[in-house]
Image (cartoon, rainbow, N blue to C red):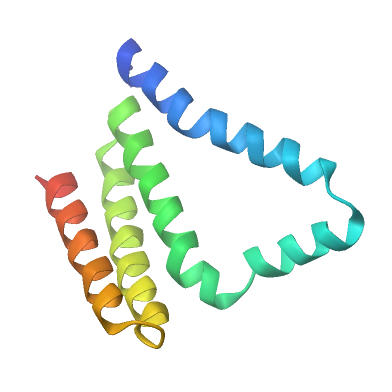
Length: 114
């Protein structure tokens, strides 16, 4: 398992800083806000759309950092599920925005797969 230092620093900044800030903000909330965040993050709509997208992006970057190709494949599958889920969730509000999201996800998958 080889690790490139530049890739590791980018990975830690890209994922470490936002996760640390979200954790800090979560513990500063009162109990009702914490419960609201828990219910929002465990809703099926979030898990199928943004949750699978975020986990897929994390796995792809983790795979690129630590050179584990099998994890990249799982990340791409989750990224595809997240793109389709986000398009479906957004379709009711705006059809144009939904197609734009789907197009951007297709580009992301294309660039990560190649």
